[in-house]
Image 1 (cartoon, one colour):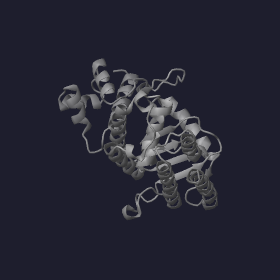
Image 2: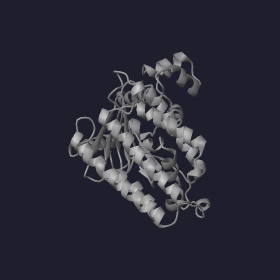
Image 3: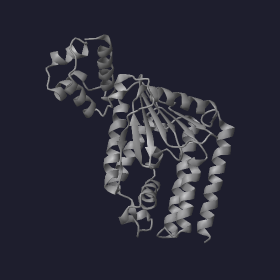
Image 4: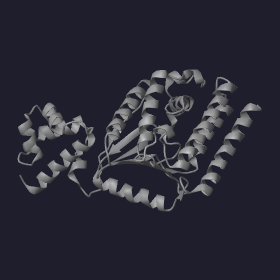
Length: 336
């Protein structure tokens, strides 16, 4: 086996190790997948036996690994992405299950970090608030995707789906347990407030109470996140431990971000998730692309203002502006 091929094989197997929960046995997983004995798997892990092309295909398919991500190519002119598409409401459940399962794996890892450059509120936080979460999906299906079944509907808080809401809460709680850095712009609040205002002006709410209840949840959401930013933690006080206490950094950037960009690092393995057409996502573990994303994220952070922890003055100014805008929108709706 040539040294380059051996290196690629080892890289692939290391990626698989990062993608499965720590409590799972890599030898067992590969043995079951490839139909090999434990001894045969160990020979491949030690680099004594070369994986066949069929085995590489099976592994890449099973663990959703793009082939280019294991080759370590420096060529950024061609990068392979996995594309996850949501066409209608039935796709949301599978979408949420996929996110939950990915986060559950991350939760088993010791060295993991999520960096989220956001064009509006990072979607994980929306799952904590069922009316906001329902509104965001309703807005996308009706006004962005033009989903036919939603065209005659007006938004109502009664549309909350308990099954999807429970899935969302599970995702939210896992995200809160993971160390993360979020990069915000002024779109973090302007986006949803503009969407609410547009729907109100267009008569797209079933009632005034529906619009005001949604505004109340947006206010509650920012109040909760302000508390998280103050203590640099997404973990509730009753669940705090010394090990997990500080797991949340928030930066405010005046440099606008064009799309949601999430980079997940597990040990030295990195994956980028980009939003596409609002809810759809593009995913790649291409090494060179992740290195470029690293540089881009770090450059934005260097030019941003820390509003969590010690950034008390900037945090006060930021959230005061947010709450003033929410109050103005509530007054507009209430006094109509």
